[in-house]
Length: 142
Image (cartoon, rainbow, N blue to C red; front, side):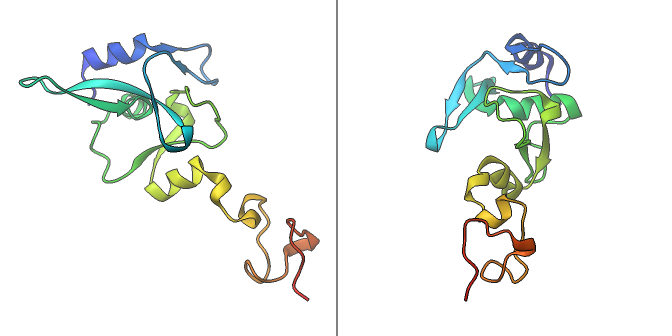
């Protein structure tokens, strides 16, 4: 469960235009490998020592939506839907709890083989003939 001070700090940094569109994050952003930006929020990890922890704001949004603790998801990650291409979006309805592999596929769809991206699966696998005459930029083997 997310405590009330963190909820307030989270909502203070969110701009909601309407229920279905992206909710923009106005707080801190972390820059990941490859230039991928991600909204983050600082939380106090240990009040006794005042150690800080950086947490993805989208993870906090999903925890608020589902009324769960930050690290109580059995290895599942906060995944952003690939249809939402806004790095600053923290709308919890634009995401889900998924496996690390699902998160990677959603985040980097360009790393998938071309036939998987186009939605056309070749009949004989990646090295076989392509389905329904589509070539996906490749020539069929002679």
